[in-house]
Length: 211
Image 1 (cartoon, rainbow, N blue to C red):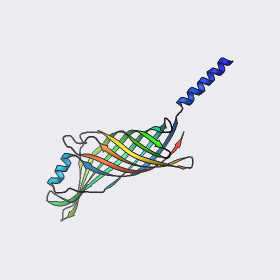
Image 2: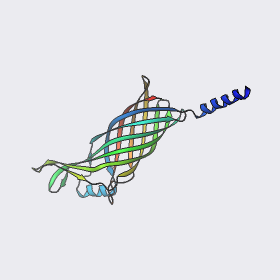
Image 3: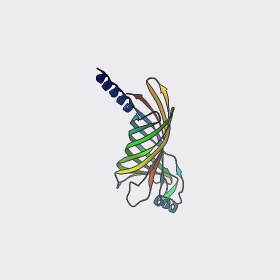
Image 4: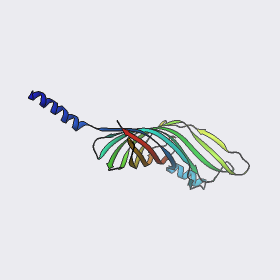
């Protein structure tokens, strides 16, 4: 009998040591993108268009927050992103245009998180799968020419990036209402032999509940 009680006690302690809390949920938000890279900068300099203007995209996804302890958790995510970048007025093929670049992405991310009460910071890798071509639209700002939309084929269907951000969780109902701001840094261009990477700043709102 004592041996049986000892076995149950060991099982209970082992379960307590390895028990984890899992929160699942979804999030959506808006984003804005900007380009970096020497080839992109050189191209804008040649066209005397050194500034960009803000264009908004959106994103939606699902996550699972796996709490290892009170201070540390791991959050895998899947997201769909519409990224949009806009440049200032430039002269292109004899007309004044304001170009906009759009890209659709499916993203898988794994974010280690450090939690302090209701606040958190996170930093981790992401894999972005480029869906289809890049869409380039040149909106004519002067002259009689019509605006054009051109699809630009991508050379890479997979782009690696890093995500850094901070969040806040507010208890609501049976779960938490979550807010976060994040910065995505692309490590490569989707087009070969062109150093121009599309980076993103996002604001997201989500809701999660424990299993």
